[in-house]
Length: 278
Length: 284
Image (cartoon, rainbow over all chains, first blue to last red; front, side):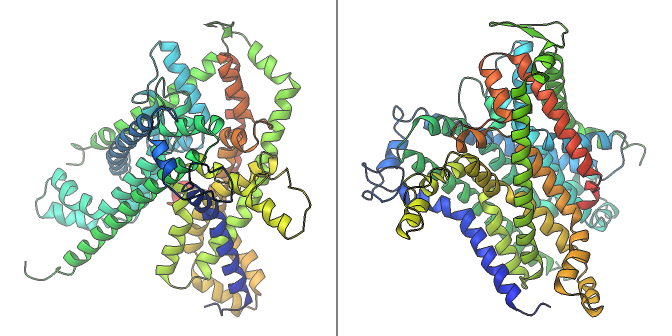
């Protein structure tokens, strides 16, 4: 369509710079996190070791890293499960007309655009006013859901807008109950998207800082712990932490991508059986 | 049959509605109510007074802080829009194979899934006094002493915003561009339009919904931000979010709440204007 003239190379260069801009800092701290015990916050590298990673897991050195890490994982997994189920269910609802649908829709949009600090503040104040202690598994969990659910819902909208309803009609014509239709027809078809929603749910919750600030209560989640560290830790253990959590995020993304691809492949294989004797 | 199952969608949407009710509507209502409360050093006192708003709106510090936040918002918005549009334009119209398109798009989106705070502190070895940037510039002889404004300054705050949030522009604009019927571009060329004319008169107008959605994301995030300003300015710059945080740490909850209400109104007004440009439900 476009001939690959100067515009193409100019834009390619711009894109390459953008990618460097995105990844450069992360790569830098990854390298710096492997320094020896005498390492500092900037180059040059002083030695090469895993010292700071070991340091990371020693409880007394850097606060409660291991504990906050566990809490964030549990919270992320819970947010993942709830986000998948609730957004899928709501996505099904929005395929039909029902009273109040636009109210719920605008609430979802509002949940996205109201600054996180306000949600955090609001939930913190609410719990204070009603006299209940905030905790990472109650108030912070709810605060995270107000962030993960709108994304989940919007993805489900996009999915169901492209969903071929004839599959369901066929299932119904063949005598499937509505539950069977959901279980054996709709869920398998939208499974890759559900995995995507799950990934969204987990990472958005796992990385969420602002919404945890006034809602997490006594025990920190990982981003709160990291934030605390940035103000009083001046050793490469900070970078080791960054490398570790970024590595974990990459692992989750890779898992999600791989499972999506596997599901797609499997479906493509099954799809090719269509029309043949089973 | 249809009548018998009319209640089904209500049941299906109940969990979602409950979460929004309990953790969005009620907390925001709480903020509004508390913003009229009185307080002293130890407790908040339920009453109805406008003093919190008076103190807030008649303080020059408030106005300076709001202006500072708006300045960050406008600069960040312009930069992310410019960069985001260019990247989306490249991906949508210059990358030919669908596989490469997906791969490069993923490359752009993956950093979004990692911790924002970590990505902010990742700039320290780059921008610090003895960082890579200063070292390189000194070696090249372009400067004779380290630049101080690179880290812990307004510059690094904006840099971090652009670093973190350009993606929010790329994704929706790319999405809009991918829906543009390619034959329109051919028609424009056949009609004698230059590349720039096609870009300005065909692509930009058709990408407007994406631009609007991206702008809403970036603007609302920057307006409510406090972490980036806190970490990247080294505590030297104020923001509305930080102002609230300070009030909270002094246990002046009603003052923080009044500020929150003002910020919320400002954000909603801004978004309201942008929403006029786009029907979000159509864009999915």
